[in-house]
View 1 (tube, rainbow, N blue to C red):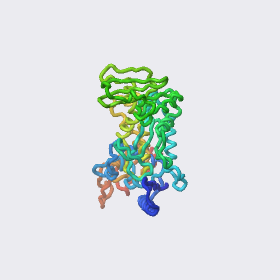
View 2 (cartoon, rainbow, N blue to C red):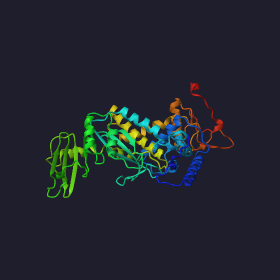
View 3 (cartoon, one colour):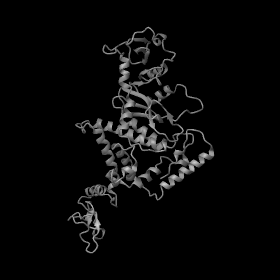
View 4 (tube, rainbow, N blue to C red):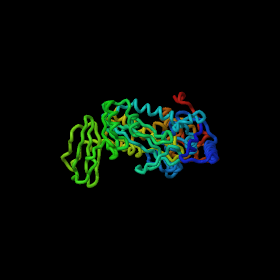
Length: 453
């Protein structure tokens, strides 16, 4: 296991001396946190991930880990899986690449390999529907990172920006791309067009919905060459817009004005006095307007129906998020990877078995909880020492007894006096699985599962 020190990345420039001091302090802190480290296997790593998932199920992402393992307010499943110290050891040693061999020119090198493997798998497991949405996602993060972004319109405001393509019907995250900042000293021209074309590469017959950051006349033409339609809001400073659509003076409220080319449709809708909503579409060819309510154009109705694919993904992912407080941006991306994977897998599972827990209104919570328990159970069965708390010890003994067949490991029913000690009455937890008498370590006989019968 290689210790990760990516928290040394800083978005602001600093002197080399101060950077070296920061790196040394970070490495010393990580060495202290991993003192007495022992190697772990795949079951223990899965158990660590399972505990992160269970913490998200219990809405405990803002709760300290000490409280999760506490005797009064904690949960037995955490103490039954691993100790609090071991959980912190694994979290402090979590790393996703070899620091000595990572390419310096790649800002995402510390997480690139895992990210590419994961995003490639997302595209193979799901075919998006006709309507897809292109938008940005912000992973909350306030630590030091060279490509950390500030977006005041997002709830978190500071974080790591991810370009995302989602299926509108299910909000399945089909393709994701981390924004690592500008490549050179100059700002990128037509960035929205480049991102939209890269995210929709390989698609045909779909309708892309996006906001005014992406929408342009050139993007719509390029997508049409790929047999993909576009519906999106467009900024007023675009040179291809007719001047008549930009004028609002003298226009009645709730009236629409249309402009057509051979392949494009533009609409200007005055929702209220002085408010002009502009949209472009290569899907619609007629000036259809709803006859009810505010008499909105059909283009705007379709846009409102499909624009929230990525926003809905952020909402459902945040409901049972496994994010924990961290100063390392690769770990923050890893937590977001877990959250998106859990939701995507839920979409796939319900598509394969639509009747699963159909009568339940909270079946997604049941699904995430079952996934977390399935990850921690193999490691619980391998524990050789019972936890101190009776509830956690009972979880371990029940699991090991069920896996071994007839109960071989004493069940825990609180501390009692040993029934076999004559002079010194010891208070013990274990009981005999056959007669139920309380037994201490001197009066227990261990037997393997092959010799039970």
